[in-house]
Image: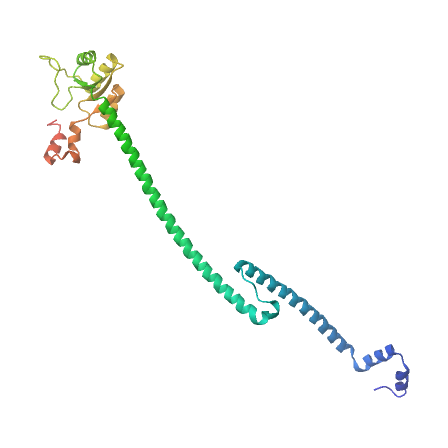
Length: 260
């Protein structure tokens, strides 16, 4: 209420003065503050809504490009956007499952191809080994006219080379019970295989020969090769192998120094 006598002054006052007086009487400034807050809040909500609409539009555009389908019209998003997105997700899951199946099929195909490649490589290697064996056999057949002499002494070696032997088999007194000489009436000497090999190599440095007689261990092989032999010739020791089909009694006797 206005004090007595102030009402006439209120009516005669300027608009700004009346506004200030009304604010003092009715405290209308609070309402103005509320209205200002509401106005700013609505402005902020409109901005946030616009930003979120742009985010949704960008997402819809990306989904559309990925799935190669047109998105719903923006003015129908309230009813159509969510069902459209759900359908796109289901389609993407189905595509993913098909891609996973195709990947598994591709892995299985790759495994079969690798297995086939391994078999082809094995066959190729086997063919190469067969070709090498055939070449070696042909080379041996081509040299079938060559001959070898089995010798028991250095003199025999010289005579064999003079007679035209292409290579020699040098056998010592350590051979398995069948050694003899190549000269009638000549008694064999007791020279060891290593000693005989060394003597033959010194006397005939250009002649190829293999050593035989008492060779049964890796150490024996190394010894005769170091002495000068080009190779070794084995016999009795092979009778103790399973492939020889010898009896247990025979094998035991071969390993017994009392018999050998």
